[in-house]
Image (cartoon, rainbow, N blue to C red; front, side, top):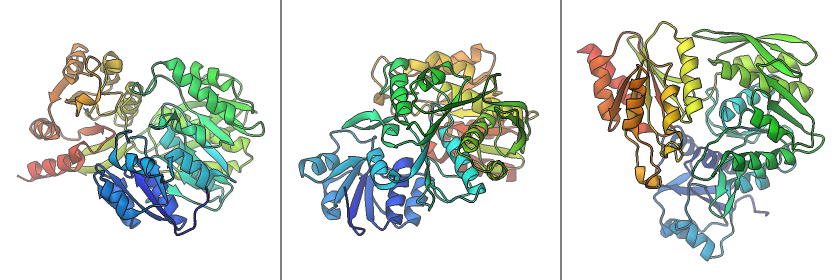
Length: 474
């Protein structure tokens, strides 16, 4: 559809990371943007405020009537009984999903580079953006997070490239297909593939089917970079019509990472290309998984013909993403780190990386099972071993447990018991306040606390830092 540059666009569910990003992109294009949400928390509240985008708290028909939009974009968190969505649809206002809008307004005429996979999408997208900028490019980008070196996770750019984080989650209640199917990929990275999003996928086979459709979208002259360490990735890569370049830790034709060394400040590794070329790389992101993320970017950029010196320079300058192993503050040598991890594998990889990074410090995990999947029992038994790298674990009571079907609900109390059976100290707490009180009574010098949640978690990060500071000065 075509809209005049001063057209009004209203976004329902505007405070999600992707929704806030498209709000910003549309504002940069000259559209008048407003929207609503049930609540807004960092970092997206600050992003929207800085852009001067009006956000209504709560979903009310009056908000939409006052805005009188030319287009409504409906987020995937919005249910079909949402009063604003129902009013827009029933009133005949033009509406579309967030990924549909991305495809129509920003990806047509570009060469989108889409990063897909169960894990590592946000960080890999950020590394790719930084690599392109290291080569002098100014790509457009839409990332489901905020790069540390930038104020926002989006930008229109002026390059033929457009970096997109490709989410497999569904698009909306009226488009029950994965978002990345709207993203017109020219090049793509597939990092990993396993079962997730139990609220919308009923099996691993269903997820693989969606990824297979995505790979089939890449044109013959495009490129897919696939992690050969994952049999599921290679299975879905077989549906690609384009050339496929592989990468991984295993031997094989393609790119390989080896000689990985993880320190407190940097992770260094050797990257070996398919022609035997070798590069020494040092990144500011901890863990083997981040070395692999960087390797996938090198593989894609090399195949696209970009200057590898600039690619590596950009990768090495990348500081990562807010809420991905982000140090939120320190008090008396104690660190508080924020991370988005919630899938059992992501939790284990994050904690393993931090364990290696802080080899001689006590590592304490604080976990909030808040996602639509982690509220369910599907990963109940897998979670216990995920916390093995930690010395102590706090598990919050599941927030809003009624969002999961009765009989299929995760039990924080059972997780605590299972962790204790593995010889670890674990504590069940009803809320952030209870966790903070226990920490203040039991902390050690040089502790590292990592908060694992995809939400605001009652602002536990700042509250914990403040409580520790008060205790140390008493």
